[in-house]
Length: 71
Image 1 (cartoon, rainbow, N blue to C red):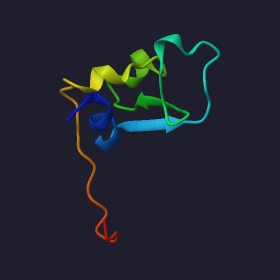
Image 2 (spheres, rainbow, N blue to C red):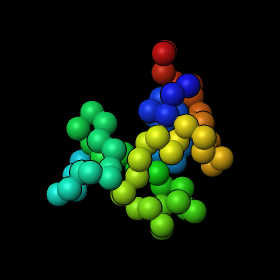
Image 3 (tube, rainbow, N blue to C red):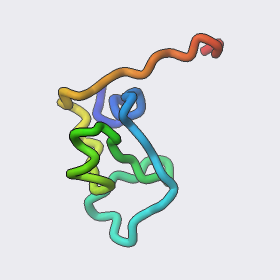
Image 4 (tube, helix red, strand yellow):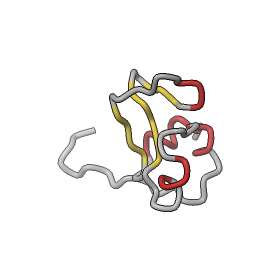
């Protein structure tokens, strides 16, 4: 699984439509700013997050599948 897919499936993965003025050290996916909300990562990195960090992340926690969906 590549870093972007891992971020998409992680419980701590979040996105916001509030884009920074300088997107240089941020990850934008589908027009939204991607970041990690893990309680040990968020206070330090905040929105200056590179999704490449997801590839080998020890805090990765997969989301539960929605049992009500047919997918």
